[in-house]
Length: 243
Ligand SMILES: Nc1ncnc2c1ncn2[C@@H]1O[C@H](COP(=O)(O)OP(=O)(O)OP(=O)(O)O)[C@@H](O)[C@H]1O
Ligand SMILES: [Mg+2]
Picture (tube, rainbow, N blue to C red):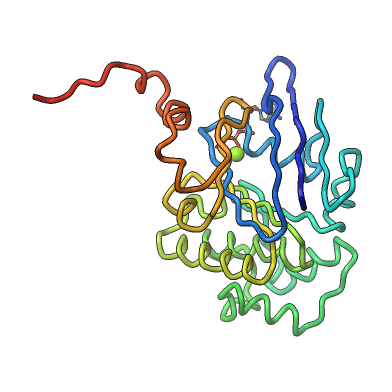
C-alpha cells in the first residue's frame, strides 16, 4: 500500500471529527472519498498531510510511519494536496506561483518543466498573468499545479471542482485523469457524485467520521447505508407509493 491511514481518530474538544477511520490506497489508484457535509473528509486529509495531528491512529506512507512527521517533511516525501479554499499567491504570476511552490519544497524546477506544467493545465495564455486575475476555475487548476510541480506520488484533492462552471469541471476532471495515467495516485474528495463515479474505480464513504462504505464505484448508489447517510431520517420514513 502506498498510503495507509490506520484507525485514525481526531477530536476537537467534544467533537470527534474522524472516528476510527481507516483508508488504504494502492499506488496508481484514483480513489473517490465522499460523505455528507461535516463527515470528516477534510479532517482526514489534514491528518494524512500533517496539517492536523491525530488523536489516535497511525499514518503510513510509502512503507514509513509518518504519523509524527512535520507537514513539510511529508510533502517532500511525495504527499501533496490541494485545499478546499483555493490557495494561490494572487500577487505573483502564474509561473512564479509554480516556482515558489517548488522552492518551498526545496526544489528548483527548470523553465521547461514550468512551461510544460502551465501547458498541461491549459493556462498557457495566462502564464505571465497575476494569479489574482485568474477566474475561480483557473485558480483551482493552478492550485493543482502548485501541488504537482514537485512530482508527488500521491495527490489529495479537496473539492477541486466545487463552484466552477460545468466546462471547467470537465476540464479539471480530464486533467486529473491525465495525471493519474502519468502515474500519480489520486484521492478525490468531491460532492459531484457523477464525476466521482465516472473517474474513480473505488469509492470510500465517510459518515460521522467513520468509513461506512469502501468498494467499487458501481456499488455506491445501491448501498442502503450510503443512501441513509445522505438522506438521513427521510430515508427511513415509509415510502408512499403513488396510486
Ligand atoms: N478546527 C476545528 N475545530 C473544531 N471542529 C472542527 C474543526 N475542523 C473541523 N471540525 C468539525 O469536524 C467535523 C468534520 O469537519 P470536516 O471539515 O472534516 O468535514 P468535511 O467532510 O470536510 O465537510 P464538508 O463537506 O462540508 O467540507 C465537523 O463537525 C466540523 O465542524
Ligand atoms: Mg471538507
